[in-house]
Length: 411
Image (cartoon, rainbow, N blue to C red; front, side, top):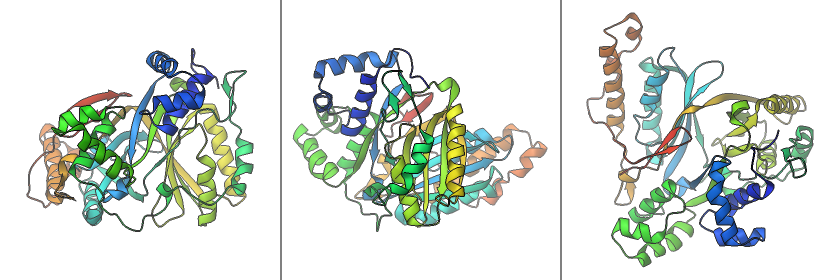
């Protein structure tokens, strides 16, 4: 598979370096690559015309008292868009996307205050009770480990990726079982940040390259205060897991983004498999399901190589390295992102209004019933099943375009 036109190996090395060292460290990346910082900046300035890429800040939400949940729901036919709106009813979503495969549905990622896990489960169960979705699955996960490798398996001479699936299968049993801390089940969920820290993190999610002076101005404090919080709180307490550079380095017209669930019989097999993917150019990010030998994550592959990837997975099942796998294909045209729930962090703790979330579901379903004039299909959605009486809608502002989706900064 050839890379996009007008993109060369140095571009890939730059993107890889920015993911490894962070987009805030242009000089360091340039030094590692042996080029001038000004040359790197010029490349970056022209790169959007040659390839799609975005920077993300991945927050280590565990150290903010937040527990990550991935939800995959199969929509009731005809209510696919309503399912998305219902998933947004919970204030703590950070990512939403339509998906398809055997059935149409949606995938969502939440960072939920750890002491409200049971409330969140009730919220997700309500989606099936009201008839918007069925077969809804919740995967409580570690934080995600981003994979920023862009040059592995790339041939500079032919300017193509050579995805060596047989080589990968043979590599897995030889890998170490030591996983990065982001893929290890946490013992607890301490809150190791204050309101200034969470504000800074929210702004870094919106723009990982934002200057600390600009953050100080937004907060109405001195730059020294922001620098202190960034260095002594955010970095020292590992509140940033990594910076990610998301790219479409294959032709999107003939490629897909796929979310996988990989299940294993032992921790050893699970960890070796995960370790084998941490430097592969087709992997975006990985998480581990809490208390299980299960890896979840998304890959980006040309369709012909996707079939070869499936063949490789089948071989892994046959030789006993993998127990099973399942996947959904993500719709690149219908997705949304937003930052962590800054506005719900007060006095060192998270405000989680379970009754409001349920009421928002009730309001959404009620609107659909009114709009449909009591059509036969709508009888499947009974808003009276939702017993909460607390009202209120959450609002979002400052929407930023991103890959056909919205990154919504919270205020």
